[in-house]
Image 1 (cartoon, rainbow, N blue to C red):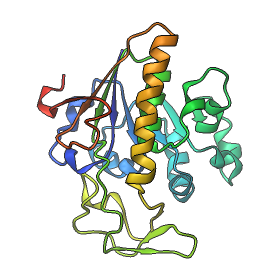
Image 2 (cartoon, rainbow, N blue to C red):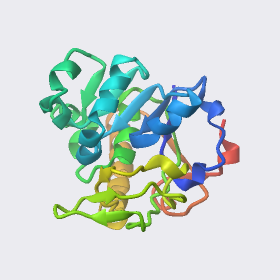
Image 3 (cartoon, helix red, strand yellow):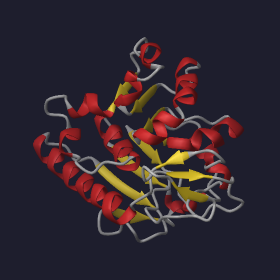
Image 4 (cartoon, rainbow, N blue to C red):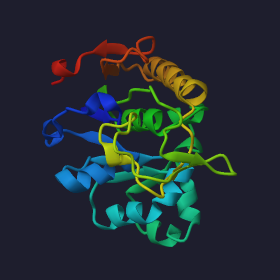
Length: 234
């Protein structure tokens, strides 16, 4: 089974999402704002950033209740929030921490995690035979003019960007959104390296050969995965 892991980077600015209509794919984080416009929802949803999950928990719950995706992979803190009892009614909602605490689960070895790497590893756990990564640019402008830093270190969008340099659609982040600084060098790249090694290790342990390809024109993950161009996607 091929699974397409779709990030939200600028490299997907001109991508035709109709390609994914009949595919098994995982979408991430705030891309639901684009899915609402196009009506094209992913098979599976992933967001494990506790700040983002908490800030958008009502939207996540709405997607769960409306069955917009087959499964949801989220931060465990939502099960302890004001929507926790509702979420517990749905067997298709799982958390990162559930997987970390599960014996022999690859997530036990993903120490620096982000939603991007978690979505790929989630695809691996779903039984993919081939993982195709799109839009995971790992190339952030850490502080955009439309954000301010808060006392607790999180960032807040004070004006919806007219041109967001980090995402494939400009209103991915909107006024009032709260999120963590990307920390691409310290967190994301370390997490991608861990992911590469975990998949290599579990391929050996489970005597499998799960292929992983990165469809991207950026070179940020070239040292981690085999690179292909988006026009080679099939």
